[in-house]
Length: 369
Image (cartoon, rainbow, N blue to C red; front, side, top):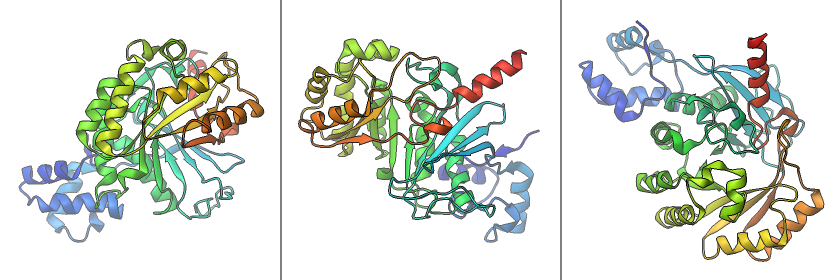
């Protein structure tokens, strides 16, 4: 009989399990702290637990970490880790350095290639593959393989801290593989572990949840009051254009979606981020600037303008640098906070929209030969 992996269980879940084993609830709190705060995975070394309890834990449970199958480092310092889950499903995690930092390849000692200032961003996955199927996204070509468990979500962050120490990252973005709001319960459970003061102890304001626009789940997220920042993958400012590139827009219409986004902004008292990928000749005109500025009027927000990162087999084109800069400047005259984001990790397929497809496709083809 397989043992239960404790990674992914919340503080209350551990307290309940310990109580059912005939132990005091506070032992669950101690165990939670050992797992996520201390990151001690050997029951024998959990010294404030009795020997009898440690033996009981070892008999019934295991603490199983994620281990990477592949690790790549970009010329700009961005790192990408490929993990194979227990059922062989692939997920990828990316570490993005702040633009001011100079990162070098990892040393044999396993030290972080960053300057270790802790200003890096961890981009984590919430699903293996994705069911949303945005026409410009590599991950969408995989389809949905399965949801990640809460343990597999937080496990990505635990791996990074185990490898690089407590300053491995300062910000977390749920912008990797998958649509977080279509794995709602596990994502919420993972966020609660991330933000627990004796868990990973990450400020909710340092966590960004990015969605393609699942309107009812945005409303539900507001009700959960987890306090994380919301980012909407917008990419087009009209219903007509948006549904051309994002099939999900046909189900969740832009007008109702924006009402949900405004609700979340009001309930969280946090600005919303809009991700806007520029596609040459599609959404990069003066009319698009007008439509976008009108859409967000009166909303406390910021807009990240990102040039499309090419994916083999997909038809979209990247605009010229001059067009990207022009769009950003024109938009900045109408919207208070606009940032033109530099693509990071393109040479290792770690940039926005590039995750997992090439490796997955190679594996799929190999399996057919």
